[in-house]
Length: 203
Image (cartoon, rainbow, N blue to C red):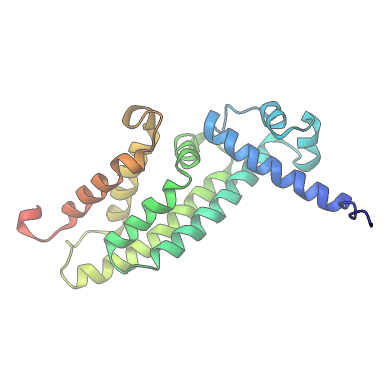
């Protein structure tokens, strides 16, 4: 009986790097982006502390890579979800659904944004750009059709994102130990849509 071929050194290195990224994502979600130590990540990943720096030159580099990887996943998810529907409500539902899967990490990213490296802040802007693209497209059509009020696009988006971020940043107050989106997502969406409604009874 032939022995199974040994895993190559290159493959092992790639697997270790991916494990570090996964563990770092969980630790950053639980403890915070700025509070999590590389020592904590190494212990949870089951590797020597120095192994982290074999793959990532610094803690900042590890943080940036985790945030970039997160940004790619959540942006792709939002695009997939947003293309299912055509209206403003559909887009905003997709936004909430896309964030719900990564709520803890996204909340940390929003709350600690001003403390993060430029590259990390740019990733957050990229995520926001993804949803704003779909929102603006849907809103222009519904405004033209008289389905929603005429509102400057920057106010439309900033009012929505500000509402969502306010709840996510204060998760410990609004949904301690739970999900803000699961608890308040529908209510926030209904409230926002009423603000946009052209129907007298919805004003």
